[in-house]
Image (tube, rainbow, N blue to C red; front, side):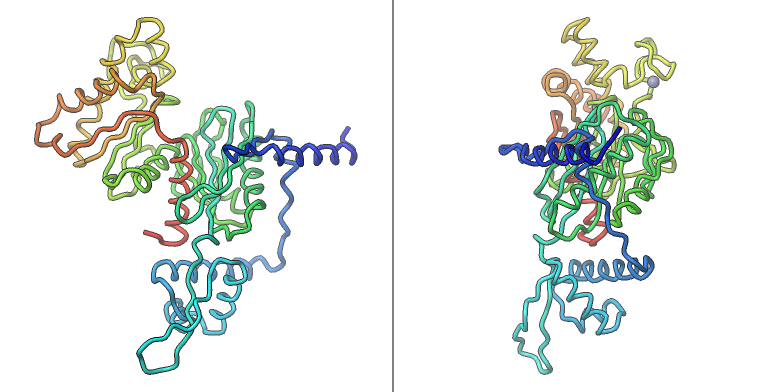
Length: 405
Ligand SMILES: [Zn+2]
């Protein structure tokens, strides 16, 4: 039986947990019970419709300041179509919240009444991001407008699935929102599986999710606009925005948990009609190969997926790595050719993908294409920075909410 005394005890544990933040990494690690206890319910403001309109107008002002740089209030009124008094009230609220700073009157050699200008305060705005792709861990972070991670909370979810896993995701976002003093411009979530453009997760096996309206649930629970994307797509976005300067047209293949891929065209991940673009795991590459869980043989998943590949190395030795890499390279070559891709990134466990496997990928791609095509092609194979998924999710939020690109 749970008594009030018990709940107080949980609170005490949580305070201890807050003090457990790792001083070196800055990560707060929680159990799911501690996470629930930390989360406080949000106050429900009266007049939900008025609230929604005001939130919309606030985001319009933020976005205009991003796209156009510092503006005066009359300029914002003209650009937004809102009345000057409304703009004045919205700007005052954004200044109070620390989102916008008042630059004062800027002297100009022009005729007319000088007006003070306002600008976005880059430190005063953050995105909350969640990475739900690890087996027993949900990772949450707060990311500022420069892509820097300023807070991080991890929760051990054990083998939670279904509604329990969904509740943990909501709790994690809520705790991160409470911990920041900055304006939260949106929530971005990296989910495994098939995710549509509305943020509904159609299939995510590990979490046993089928048609879970994740973006809608997070939005209605926190009041914050939410974007959900497939993890490999968001990794590709993170790589494109923060790591490689040539990544507007790129293929990213992730081998850690099975095989997932993303295709970026013009800097935007391709989703596909069934939101399954890049789902190359069950492409047959070796008809005489090992049986696959899909019922067929020699799928890319059983040839290069990290769990299968490491098992094959254990049984047959490292000689299997180069041919496996080559098969992946041969699969990627026609996509490179068809879309005129100039960057291919393959990420996975370093002990598997670096060395012989990487050499195999390069020779597999090169063997299928004319030298003139591969001349400008960059192929990177290695371990990726796990923060890139979080930063890719933040980029997605900021670009959608603030029109940063
Ligand atoms: Zn298969």
